Image 1 (cartoon, rainbow, N blue to C red):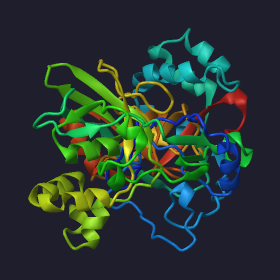
Image 2 (spheres, one colour):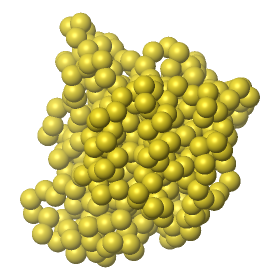
Image 3 (cartoon, rainbow, N blue to C red):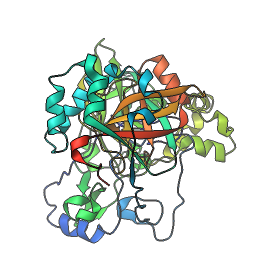
Image 4 (cartoon, one colour):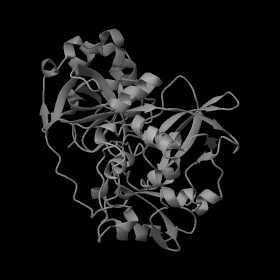
Length: 423
């Protein structure tokens, strides 16, 4: 959908994996990428999920510019191993309505069924039904958990904006499609040890350089942007900023129709928290740096709005689809289901798998324990036991996503016949 925060801390977004697009004349692109292959690029963002307290990194002398990173590249951390568990060890398993996760599970199977680990179990699921959900999962799956400390569970949602096909007051702020000159290169195609890492940039002659930052794009930079029309225009730059953070949303057009904007790509820069920026500038206290607090500050300080938004160099591009009853599409390629889909780090949690989530409700010690589907990813969703909880659409979803930052654990349900989940 895209993102989450990245995530961050209080809320985030969904994202779709990028694809490699090479413009004509890029004869030396492969050579250029090989030279850059030692630089670890970001994994594809849902859109970088956001959290007002998301970690930022200071520029360093040996910054790897082509990867748009803000600090020296660090080696990928060693992944913790798996530990198997019984269903009786899953907190709250016997009290859950697993049948409510059946439809999202079948949606995951649409993307997983051709993978050897999933073929048999997904085929058998077609002959079962929601009433048999608990028995099916218990008979066909084994729960596994990473041998790691509990992680952070944040939330994201699908926002609603007002827009128009044409630029006219008050619809003055453009949402762009992915530009023609943006390169999204999967480094795993060049070196297996870089699987899952992507490089975004553009060609300057025969040289790959970083793509334009948010500030440069807003100032009109970019041949690709200048030669393509915006998808549409919206009436609020702050709401557009948070649409980029969430990764997708619904746009109510002045014609009365409704469309979806889904994550298409991103300019390659890591998300930098505007909430943290306001805290560091002494504009608010940390506990005030929620989505609602940031929006209130923007209304009260219109002359400093560009300063705030341009602190984050990340910029998200969209694609349009017809708005229906289904949720936004996640990185798995399937619609997200409110309160049953999560975004995960696919290096640690297999994308598409059922996941037992053990956490608590936002700002509460009340247990939130339910069967989820790992159907999305996020630029700031990094590590084991890390997830972004998709709350859905509407005022309640917006409120809960903005409040959520809880400790939690993820138990991956992996087909019994497939052995241990991948490391």
